[in-house]
Amino acid sequence: MNDLPDGADTFLADAGWGSARAEALTGDASFRRYWRLTRGDDSALLMHAPPPNEDIRPFVRADRWLREQGLRAPEIHAEDDASGFVLLEDFGAARMRDYLDEWPQDEADTYRGAIDALVELHKKPAGPFPDYSWAEYAREVRLFTEWYCPAQGLEVDADGYIDAWQEALLPVLRNQRAEDGGAVTVLRDYHAENIMLLGALTRQGLLDFQDALVGHKAYDVVSLLQDARRDVAPELEREMLDYYLAKAEPGAEFEADYARLGAQRNAKIVGIFTRLWKRDGKARYLDLIPRVWDLLERDLGHPSLAPVARWFDANIPRELRENGGGSFEA
Image 1: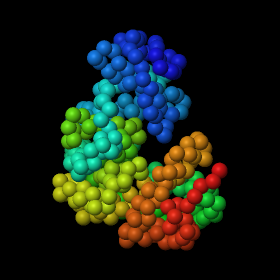
Image 2 (image 1 turned 90 degrees about the horizontal axis):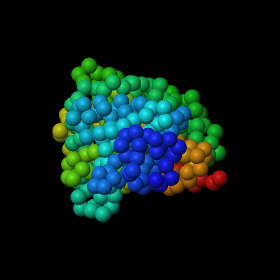
Image 3 (image 1 turned 60 degrees about the vertical axis):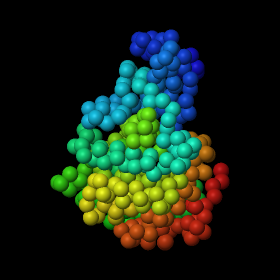
Image 4 (image 1 turned 90 degrees about the vertical axis):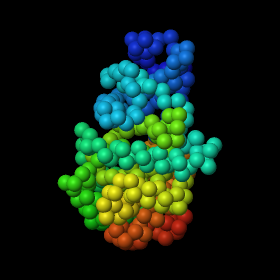
């Protein structure tokens, strides 16, 4: 075996994969780790989400719900809550991000396939997940003032920051609670590095949905089209947003909510990437902040973000805003 954690040998033996060869795969920003297992012509993925830092139960619950709805989440072959092991169907190596790096001419078709998967998800009743509440939105945006601002040596109006976001996001909360089907399952991290292409550009394999909530239709659309890890040209973003609007017909306020949630998500990500550097020693995430910052600035230009834009004008120095969030020093 290849550097497997304690308990993996027993788990795999019980699952019938004790003789498999294991190859470690690149991890993500969490404590989770992954291995590809091969056994003759068969393959599977081993995920280890070690307690107490991780909990596999939300992933398992979301996976089974998505599969019940006819969406393409990986089949679960075996699981062990106590040790944090899950044995999963292997979706292969055709990750959307990697595919487009090699075949950029297929970008529009591939993104249309990803939008189609969201349209299908948004036709389903909301799943058995917690609500994307104001408390959760507020917790997320506070990551910006809790981590980014101290890292830049800024003393800011933290209370005014939350007040501004509350004013901006109240319409989002109202619209996602609308009785005419406003609320949908939100995967929360739907982007090109979490989408697998299963033999065709229009067949999407879903990953990284353990944090699913019941929220607004715009959230996963903006997660896809304002990608923290991959450049999506504004022209392609507009084309795909129009494609979603034509297929889903989500309502008159959708574009304003798209901007609001784009800004909320991007402010959160700037905070998270700063935290990954300061707390976890993962400095590579700093290189992604300028892209996210540019997206945040673009969203703040929408009239629906006026309260938040005023806060940024008053609290974040212009030189930082014009320099992708500024530089970072230990």
